[in-house]
Image 1 (tube, rainbow, N blue to C red):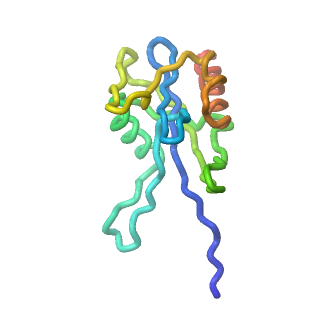
Image 2 (image 1 turned 90 degrees about the vertical axis):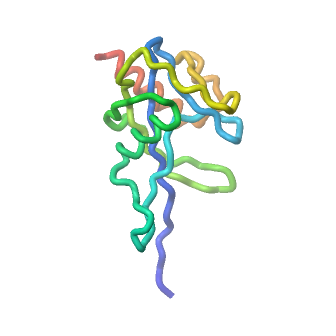
Image 3 (image 1 turned 180 degrees about the vertical axis):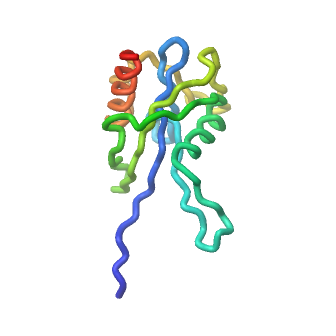
Length: 148
């Protein structure tokens, strides 16, 4: 029998603030809020389905598709790489980037699904139904932006 190490999905997420300093979050099927982003794709072994070329490009494309915002994906958020303990014992690696909206006055797309997209003042984030890793990433990126 050949040993096969466990594999975990890797998700790239972005912390974005609008011109009014509100953080953009997406609602998920479990009634929780999370940072926008997606799972990285490895592609198929036969090359028929290409994999992502880089985490940053994958995140940039996803943010444009899900929010309509053109963003510049910045550095990794300090402490923003963490293991998410999901439902049914599933684990995933979350890699969080700080992002800047290229046009500060952009308004995110309104989703067809009510409650799917939200803009929250940073002071409200701690009280949201959201994983602690996301809350920590929002706080750290906000504090880092304030120092610039």
